[in-house]
Image (cartoon, rainbow, N blue to C red; front, top):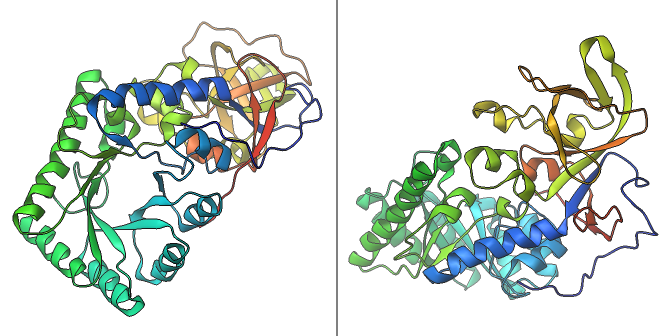
Length: 391
């Protein structure tokens, strides 16, 4: 982790949580740094590299704190991210979304700039496209074969030896077989530490077995990559794995809290909103942070505790008892006491401010152009860090 000079830091002109325009995105850097240190400490004894996923932050300054060095390694989910981070000096990247052949020209452009970017694929057709593009360009594009460890999304089944070998052979006809990777997205459905540990072991075994299949067929497989925030924190044995990719751990969110990966007090991201009205007969407090500020993500609706659109906190980040953003229109957020609770609405007035912890840090962050950085319960805005979007 590095705390290099913040090259995009802007002046805050004495702004505080009481004066900055709302709605806006608040980042508690002290919580963020603790989250990063926690995962590094957990993984260090297991001898694996942390290749953090930069899709959550989409920020140069956040990335600088996440990576082992200014050059990486890191993971991205869009080529726009790869290009932005390459501009900032990152040189070791995995583009962890199945490659569309028409995007290979952008991959080549990055590699021509000295960026060691690898792509991900799970079909012979993609492998053939990578190999053909590599031959035409006179340079081998590296790729990892994605493994489906839990039926959550994409990838080759780890016991489908024929498919693995066919993809590998098609790839090495012109490209480079860098290794295998997987993402245990099914771990988001876990409801206990025991389940999380089982997901972590299934994730590990899937790629280790796939790597063995490739090696037994005479194909190279130097990289064995796993990655999800829940499994990264609950893995106890990573034998055979070379690296771990995780992203949302940098901020955490209410979905991670609902799974049992973090405490409420670990969540580093919040949205600042201002009270703009009341519907007292309905038990509503209205704020100026609707779904355009929070996102439409309702990830906790599938969990035992539904947090609505977010947990409502005081200005210093302390959660009000059983107070949630129960509903949201485009620019209006509706605060209520949690259904079935004995809690009471706080005596908020027009112009008072609250902070709302998000369900999903990635999607909430994507609604905003910048982070307003604070330290713990200090109301001063210490810095403003730009973030970017797009593909």
